[in-house]
Amino acid sequence: MSELDLAARLDELVRESNADGSGESPAALARLLFELPDEAGTADVALKALQDASPRTWVKLDEHLRLCSFHRPGSFARRRRAAAKAKVSSPLGVLRALCSPDGRVREAALQRSAELPRLLPVVVIRAADWAAPVRDAARAVLPELLRDALRVPGARAVTSVATATHLAGRRRGDFVVELAADLLVDVSPDVLLAVRNADGRHVRRLACRVWLSRPDTDVRDVLDAVLGEADNVCRLWCARHLVERALAEQRSDLVEPLLSAVGGDLRAMALDALVRLGRSEVGRAFLGDRSAGVRAVAQWAVRRDGEDPVPFYREALAACVDDGTAAVAGVLLGLGECGSRDDAVLAVPFLRHGRPRVRAAAIRAASGLGGREGGWAALLTDSAPVVVRMVSRTMIALEVTVPVGELWALLDPARPRHVRRAAYLLLRHRDTWTRLEADLRLLAGRDAELGERARADLLRWVREAVNAYARLPVGGREVLEELLRDVRDVLPDEVVRRLRWQLGH
Image (tube, rainbow, N blue to C red; front, side, top):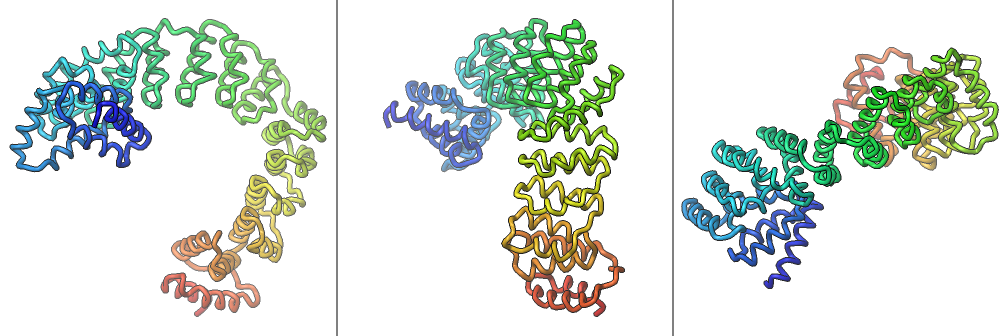
């Protein structure tokens, strides 16, 4: 195989291994590296391809190279002698030696200082090795190697730190994580930025934590990170940092941009900081926010100014009756959080709103205020699953009953899935015998959508119920006995006997 073809094949295996570290690609990559000749040109091609390997690929490569040594023909002593020779022949041989199953070979490979910088991720792995002599040898050389790699922003620095965080869950992985954190404190801003932009969330969080603790961190960069960071944890850390700086320096301009953030937690933190800085009037604009946390802070801000948020919600709903957008949902939910029982009627017109989110909010607001709107049952056939889920849970919580005949009709297989699920849920919460009949009907009909749920519910009832004290309706025993005969082949015999005993047999 020519060097050009070898490079293409290695690049392909590295890409596949990065995409799926638990598949066959890491093993194929290890086998190829294990069989390559110990030539300088070949080693350069191989190590260049491995520069793009992810931490997970390096860890898997370490495991599979060790397995390749185990599966090599010959006695263990012969394999050990072969590995000892390979480690001194080329950088590729050092890689194989560092991943050898023999701890003495791994330890000796760590003395080859000239080749170790290009194999830094493996040195990081060896610093968490299970063999103490290997581990100590790796920890002796790792600080200087890692410090040297962190002098310039590049793949070697990022991959090495990422490999350290990848080993955090290992029994002996604390050393490499703490070492990486200590060294990141003194690196240049460019290097820290490169590590912060790494793919893995663990390495990003380590770099972010170090970055926020440094005195030279610019608040404008922190603000950019809050608005552009993909990881939720890093984004929250950056937001808290801005809030702390804003409160300490009495600077509202540091948190004002967060009021337009997508995440409700960020908006709530910013609004809370502004209120603490004496900007309570800002809260009024967020009383109808879609986030419950933001609404809570806004209501607190309004009350802190000596006002009541309820009149605002009443006025806003009166002005939004013909509003076709979903923005009114936050106003409805806010009214439900701090209104009175008399305000429940204000939510009723929105039960027919064109947006499912608004209809669901109206149900929640009306029920939270103690309303018992008689038209809720009609919403059980709503086209939006979110509305049907909300109304069914509300009816169960408030013990609003629907005629059983109507619920059986909603359980018809021709109905949409979300409607049938809601009907089944209401039947289960009706009474014991209705619950059992619903389970048995679905099992007898070999229902593809709800059959497994019904079977699980029936088994749970049999396991937990002591006795059924409710009186059977007229003709109920005959219906249940007929259904039991139809499901004997899908239920354990003991369950059938227990159900027959509950029926008086």
